[in-house]
Image 1: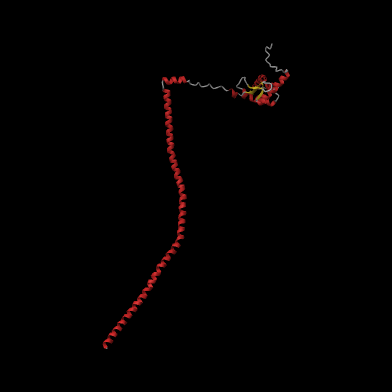
Image 2: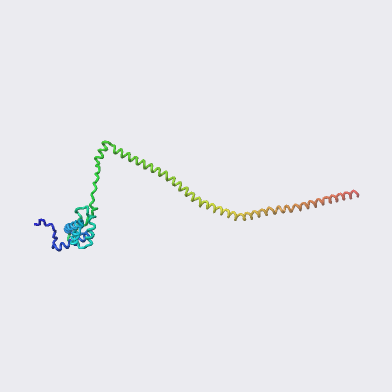
Length: 266
């Protein structure tokens, strides 16, 4: 019978078994998690809990006992420094065993052994009980006040949202008008510059056209002056002819009178 025989032999001798678990515990505290078979994981948890209780005690004798099991001094030093912070508020349950399935080949069950922080063992917050739909309907049927209050709140929220939208819509045109005025002032500058350049071009063209116009006007003046001069020149000639004719007129008169006298004398 196996009464009070809790140690798992695992088909190994005692020396082999102790050496194996010493190595596994050292790697567990070094890397904080280890993957092994399910039977070894259950036995390894006993070794790890014993070493953590020694580290929480923290005296010299406990340190020496831990060094007799763990093979690396650095791992023991790390364990004794962090044990009070990580496991001080917890009295047991320092490790967690998670089943990962079966190993291919021999189909042995594989488990993950990892250390548990005190942060992981937080008190669970009490869940809020959801109000049943039946109770809500009963209250609504009895008084009808909660539903009315909710409707009023919704209507007030919708009105406030509409008012905010209207305010935003009023503010936006003002902003757009300001932007337009600013854009207009910016656009006026190029327009004024364009106007000045166009005026300069127009004056330049006018200056260029003036000599041509002046030349045409001078030609017209010369054309008008030529006949006028000819007319002026003809007037003295006419006067001379008239004077000559006048001078000739008395001679002819004299000649006629002389002829008359000669006839009378005959």
